[in-house]
Amino acid sequence: MRPTPRYAFLEYDGMLAFAHRGGDRNAPENTMAAFADAAAQGYVYMETDVHASRDGEVFAFHDDSLLRMTGDDIAISALDAADVDAIRIAGDHAIPRLADVLEAFPACRFNIDAKAWPVVKPLADLVRRLNDDARLNIAAFNDARVSKVCRLVGRPLSHVAGVTESARFHLAAWMGLNARFSAGCLQLPFSRNGVSFVSAPIVAHAHKLGLQVHVWTVNDESTMHELVDMGVDGIMTDDCALLKSVLIARNMWA
Image (cartoon, rainbow, N blue to C red; front, side):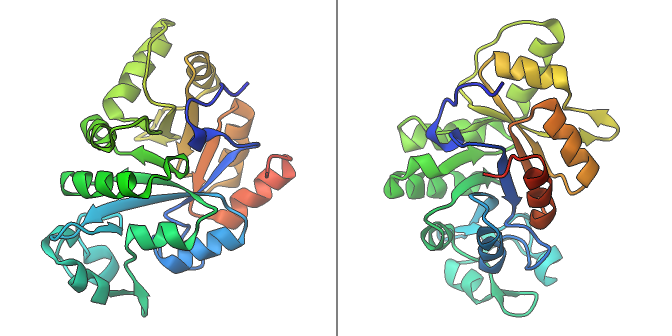
């Protein structure tokens, strides 16, 4: 049974289906076209990543370097926003500013992964200025980055448990202990390097502690069904059409 959501972002009927980086099957990841495709399929929840330009503009982009997406081995943090605006990915796709993405899809909620320290203050400034917290969930592998964004925003904000807090949760689950968390959810890989991070007992213990469990990044139909059977609360995927079809079949597509 899903725990009572701690934050408005997590309040939703059915499974929280996340379009990971907007999905990448029909458009390049983290582009306006990717988010538009996911929204057209009916996705409410989007996952994205953010870096800041040298002059403090927040962009939706995953990697530390542009190398994989454009062939240029340079970081967004080394460029001014105007320079980033001029870059094109896979033909004619711009790297979007996060503010523009949020404005373009007002009915969608965004799980925002702060990928590096330079983006922390610009992201917090943007969140504080928008004052639309129910649409936003702050994530990062680094717990300190998550905490700093929330602290700078200065009001209760939906956020995930980072790597250290997730490890503390797994220890508590292994020992059968109660523990307190300010986060509203865990966001875990299904497995990594042969180690499973998600199981029915893990999900049950998370729910006992009031935490939702979201799993990334799942592009396999059988794994999607397995996670639904475990009782997870959310699944992130690159293959939006596949996850939607699975959830429709399980009567969990809201």
